Structure formats: C-alpha cells, structure tokens
Figure 1 (cartoon, rainbow, N blue to C red):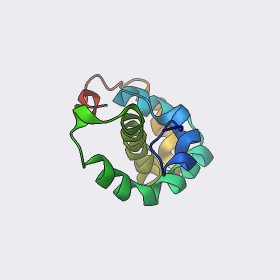
Figure 2: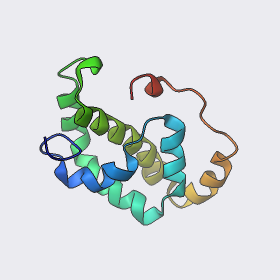
Figure 3: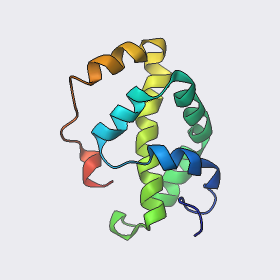
Figure 4: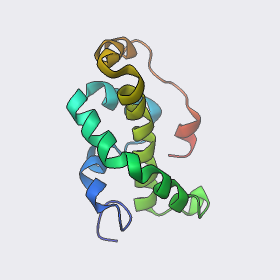
Length: 114
C-alpha cells in the first residue's frame, strides 16, 4: 500500500493527512477550526464513500486493521463530526465552535477503537 489510506481511497489522502486523527475531542477541535468551505469539500468527497468504506472495514476485527485501514476509520469518525456541522448546524456551526472550546470531550466510545 503506497498511499496513507487503503487502495481505492487515494483521492481522500489529502483529507486524511489532516483529519484522520485519534480522539473525539481532537476531531471536534478540527471541525471547529475548519472553514465552512473546508467542511463542505470534505463532506462532498467522503459522503458517498462512507457505506462502502464501513462495509470494507467491517470485514475484519478492529484488532486486525492495517495502519491504512485504521486511518480510514479515523477519517470516517471525523466525517461524523463534519456531517453534523454540514447537515444540521449549517451557518450556526461558527457559533457552536466557540462554545465547544468550553466543553471538551473527555471520553468517547470511539476513542477506544481509533
């Protein structure tokens, strides 16, 4: 595997380089520090790939994922944060981002896996 993501996901490598981070709080902070245009570009690039990517990742236990597959999983977890901002909060995301700094995520089930 030459890319930072599994084969077939190379077009998402530029997003993974920045957004495939471990930790729910880190993902929330990245979401809050991104622009609406950056969130929309990420959302548009990943939206139709989520189902197939999850199907692919579900084929093996978490403990057996390769480094590239773990990075893809972390990218999908970041997508969950961004999808909330794009689909639900829209223009209000900037206001919510300011408040998020006062409510860090200290624990998350997702932190146990990625």
